[in-house]
Image (tube, rainbow, N blue to C red; front, side):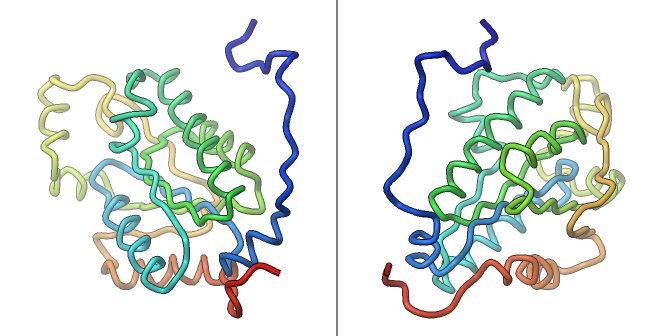
Length: 208
């Protein structure tokens, strides 16, 4: 049996809480900002800054970060194209569950392949999925190289490294595109906040 095929004796259990109850309780509708871009482009910095801002303004959210997830849930995965696809599939399923709980989800993953990002959109659902392309150039990312990964990749010490020995496929129609070599963190935050604002509600935080 395909590992991704649901066993016939596994039955979906219906909850007793309606999505509207969660929206009323949390004063927000669920959304996933799917941030994609090269290593060193600024994804994690923006993701955690946005999370902090949203929490401070009273909105429930969580960052799913590429490095963090590979310390636990996805530590068994490598960086082959097949492993990268499975990495994204698992993350999309986690984001979908968090959205079902009413949370705002911010993901920070290179997610280099368009097909994988489209798979994530299909899993999460088009209504909640917003693709944010951190379009900082390879040259700028290499100049920053905060983890020294590009230097190692250029030296052949890291195989299948995106942008050097593995491809990156830019989005065709991202909801938002941000180049962190041109825009400040504050300006990037403003533009991402504008993307999220339609999902935020005012009023009582008590469930009806």
